[in-house]
View 1 (cartoon, rainbow, N blue to C red):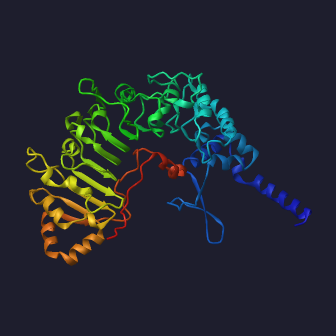
View 2: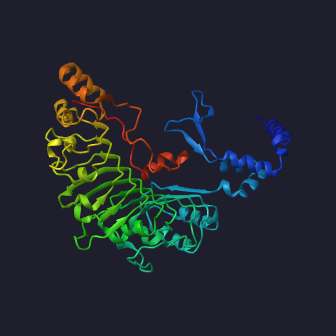
View 3: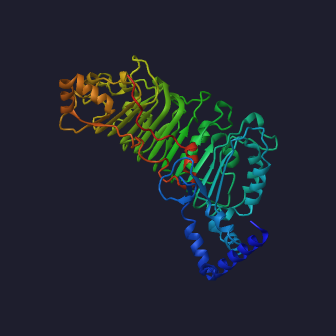
Length: 478
């Protein structure tokens, strides 16, 4: 293209922009338009012909997302000046680093320095970074400020006690150390427990809390002090995830076991750890509805007393990739009120290992005349190897159950077809005792995102880093 033709086209384009009706709108109207457009992410995918198209439905993983504020600010100088003056367009900080710990962090530090002056605008601050040390310096600037609009604060970055600068005190107590002037709208917080002494925000308004321990026993926090957070500072807490936070370095004896009251907690998830009975406080959760165990080893459950956990309103129990000691499991005792059970195991297990043995009525205590979980209404079985399924086992599990109590058993369709072909008469007996349904590939069996109020949008896939996966049906192989 010749230079003359290029110049002509540029002039023509500029004239078209000047004549566009939107160019004559007052700034007040443009502000409203920009704010409304910023409510939803702009998703860009490619058609077969390479042209961009906008979609508002679920998109494949390779779809890119554009920040509306960035798009608006690159149209023309007028729009850029206007968009920079609209705080609602610049409220989210999201950073994910896949670099090694030796990579330079100067760009991140510079970005954070530029953000500090706009803390009052923040609505969401999410930081995944391999090195916590630059962040420890940065949070010093957040100590005595307010974040009036902050709703989400997630920094699951570990702080190793062997590498903490000597200038930073390691006070064993835990109290808010950033945003001390207040975070009245903060509802979702995700932190590594090793960093609680350095970047813990006020928790009085937090409804969903995710706690992880990525460095095991080399953290700083004393566990009883950590658990005391939930009784003393989190009256609004309804969703709690404890991901690997327990360690073998501490325990309670019967004389020192504290009482931990969480009056408004509704959903509790415990994951990636071994539970020992002498690590649990006297836990009172009167409103708890769902309890999820994910990759939990109960080898120390013999030391566990079922009476130390009070969950009278519990109605759903999820066991995902867990090793439970079924013969005398306190888990079955303190969860006796549940109506819904989900057993899911993605691992290849020996025939001698029975993931479902917790259902076995012969291990119920003498006082449990109606068997374990007398109010049970729904059982979902989602196991990887078919050898763990047994028609006779389910017949034994449900033979003592009164027929007046309805029960639904949900299993893999492949297993059901084998039962129907080889054991039709025995299957008929089971169908007389319960309604049998098949698992649906499209339905996750942990039915809601976690926490329930977790924001979605352009960062939904990355937020799974602080979430447990949705469990779908496993392919069954005999």
